[in-house]
Image (tube, rainbow, N blue to C red; front, side, top):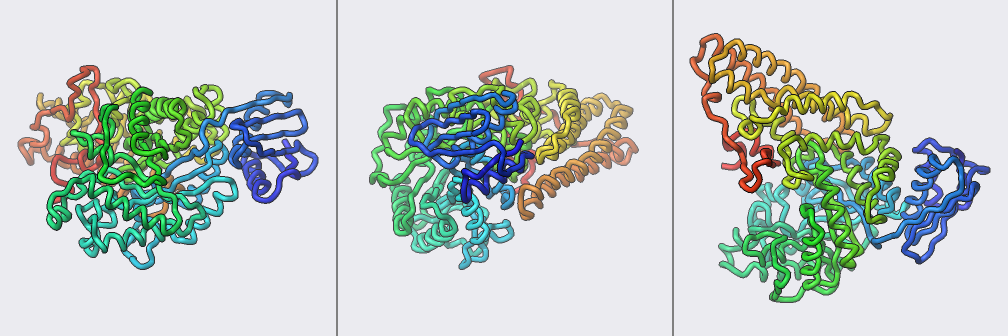
Length: 632
């Protein structure tokens, strides 16, 4: 199909040609004419009469979404005229990409997500950067972390401007700064190892530097200053200096300082809202306050401050409704952040993402919150490939234009943007959804992570999985992934990696359980057989590491991969050590294997639901050993 772009000009023409060429179309005079008209209606309309495509919207990204809708529909309608309308429920929508959990996302990958935002009709991309941007005055800030330069961030900002996507810096000005505060020179800034020292002139100078350098490359006046999960605020060095103070007072004073700096620079401030709730809750939780709660702050929140209500967990709209109404007691400026669940461990948790996003955005629509974004965290090392975020990103975008996500339409978007349909992505979700998890994986169980990393001789989770045939489960998953045909897109490597992972898990899942059982009945023939299985499994680990490495260096910058190199390499080392230990026992060099004398126990038990036999554990250091692998 040939497109005539003569009615488009400047950046719109340039970017439209890029989109069309990327999907195999040509652009020259004499083809189907593409037109765009701006209107003030909260409706996106695509109209095709057989010769001209007319797209109507009130934002630049509406044009690009309309273009992609046309491409989807044209294939199915055999050049027949058609008209499609969508309601624009939100004025500001977007994604937040975590660039700070070892995986500092590459510039090319970020540009791919900018294009994804525009194609799906989202007008914002937040870059979450704890210490991965430049502060020239401080070479330790972001050292060995693949930090972004001013020029790189400016390049991304300009790229977003071309296509109608506003790039917004999201930083931390209170907590979540442990990767920077690890340096000895920062002791004077620390309240705790993760939290800045409040009411300190040095801290104020440092915060000023962060805000200045994080905002400077961007044309937007918006900035997200973080300030979430500071649970130990005022309980470290601050306590020694000032004595105990009501932490609401500490929090509001620090916020006032951050807000003043931002206003001096003409910035519009937004922050996570959870600390206002946690400090009020008797449990320290974010979501358990009753609706009749009164906050009674020592001083009011600045009127121009936007609070961001983040919630990735609730499966009932009524809970979101209640929490939005509580937020409205604090501010008139509110936006919502849902979660794409790329942080569950090794694999994405799509079923929980879809369930929680659907209820969260339904609540936003009914409660009148018209600004929302979807977060993509990569907790504990960016073990999940970045491109797995595309599925939840498209699902979120659909909910910004529709109350329900229809499978047929969702498949069109997935195939158009990645080559693969929903059924293929469900195989990735299946890694953490065997028998034993709750409906919609409400508990966010992640057996694929702890099965992969736990020790074959001292498996902390063997008691948890002992009654499940997870080797068979992952063998079936391996075959399903193996039977997928390649689509010639960047997702091919991702699905290949997960195929290899499923193969590894099928071999490793029950090894520890079977070793203990054979050892306890002194079945040395079985132990010899299992030793050979361990050797085979170890050989597959090398392939797994190579496949993950390929993906890393197409999605992220180099620093940070050393963490996955060490973790995956550690599996191989421990498997080989297990072989040596078993050989020592079988040859009579040792008379017992103390590791296998230890009885299997449950790592975590759900006392409320006996059918929930699995559990969640998302920190590598809590999986690989019961010993002290971090800290004193």
